[in-house]
Image (cartoon, rainbow over all chains, first blue to last red; front, side):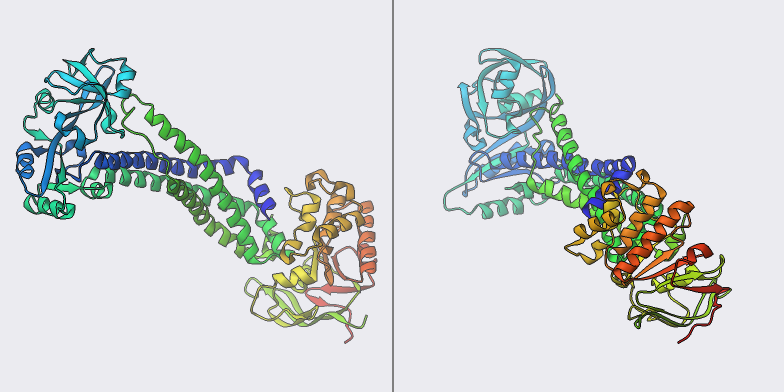
Length: 368
Length: 224
């Protein structure tokens, strides 16, 4: 039976391959966008869990974390709470660097390094407003050492050290003194996030609840990527967009399979009549046609996965996003893609298989 | 010859909502191991009768028992019956072009899942003289060879009866004779019942008995 199924597909190579290409496109989209969204989420988990902060605070209803805006006044209020051991603020934004107009730049005070999970590898922390720390990969890519000068947003800075944080998003570029970045970006007294560590014996949940209560509607607390997803829409938008595009591609793929299989059943009416005449039950004819459409789906799962993997890799090579996005190829993403490809194959094959099973042997044998 | 493989009484089959009466009350009996030719001009209803006997179609009324099965029952698909009891040979060999001769012979065995299917298919291909062409596909075979593959396919499940609808209709007279001899030989050595539909009296002559159909009726009296 398996041999017969493959031979039937092989007979119409071009048509089969076009059907496979249709589904593959959808699968590739799912893999590529899924891996990128997973990568973004992974980075956020790392950001939110890095350092010694118990939780972060951001602006409610901000579409994405870099667009969050929190007044520095809030930081001073919260820092005075008895349950809070330490609260520090950070301004996260993009700035233009030599060769990269969208370099992730974080304004943070040296006393916040521990809470933010910053580790100095070389040099020292900044002590003046014209000093910066460079992320180690950026430093090596740009060929810059401590002591060298660098231009950020057309303003000259001196590199005094090299750091890493162990996660890609924060590692994306450079650390500047908070005040210097606020000035550079003309965003005085503005923060993106507040990182909070609570006192011993204080429940993190209670501290978070107090923030949510006292600043209801203006601030939100974040502890995990799931919470981030709930509160910030950028990832949800990426995911929703990815699903919409994938769905569209899969509908097109499904219609492609159905078209291929219907044509194939129509052309083989007489053959199917012979199979029925020599004793094949309707169920076996059904199995054969579904087997063919499932095989198209299985092949598309392989091809689509490869294309998707390649596309996600290609995206990370773009200079604009290099260092910002690192796709994560989770096993369940592949499992999901395979299940969807087979599902599309199966659904696309149902109606043609039903049609084939309904063929009357006696009428089919008269069919020319 | 005492067992009756086919018993038909007053078989009626109409088409086009009763406007065309293909069979108009056919009664006949065919015994186990018999070689019967159903003869008649075009449109006499002989193929319709063969389709009813082979459970490819159902009669409108009448009684029809084939190999112990009541083919007038209204429920169920007769695929299992066709797989176990009947071997078909059609005028146009009706092989699957993408499959080799051997695979074509194996097609009916898929339904019964017999373990010895492969050995049997090879043995039959050898018997019909095509052992060396088992891996050729139909387009690479001559008309006579294709029909011999069809004969092997019809016999692969050890059926009780073979139904051949104009099996030599598309062959030249020399090949026709060879295929008829092959059929006859296989029929007698395996003791199967062979029912052959033909419009050609010369072909009909090779049978033990000839049943003639004209306008959906058996012309010669049939004794019960």
